[in-house]
Length: 218
Image (cartoon, rainbow, N blue to C red; front, side, top):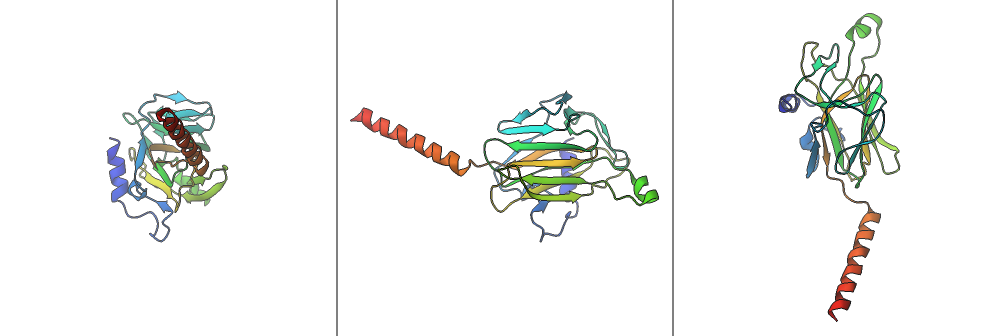
């Protein structure tokens, strides 16, 4: 069932004109190699806002009501996410953030939806609720942010959009999704590359090993 919503999103019309290449609506826009986190390893874990490793080198932090391995969320006028499909979910006005601890990534995104209340828009002229997707750099500063309204059928099931950010260079330390009742599945990201300082340390270590090897051989 996980593949069906993604296939629907891939087949849909582009979310934005291709000129805005940094905000993408399909995982294929991420530079290879791409890794995937599907949250099937969790089953209703209430994180309480504490960090949780969701994959090697990927740390999740969320709001106090965030849940990993959630199996049911009513998104009101955006339909239902439910049984048989485990995902990450925020609380009301929450945040789901994924940090790449082993290096910086050039692109990341996920299959996303959020709670919606059309009556507030129709009757009171309120702005539609949206998802704020942001990329953070090495020093935890926002380097890019976008607000996207996800509009799916009220009787829909596991519907949504892939929302991702692609950068010209590997400078994404973390990516976050904020909004009202945000749900996220199938986090995809370009494999992070070690930072320059890490490469220098690795090179120094290899040189030292080579020097010791030559000494033993002498």
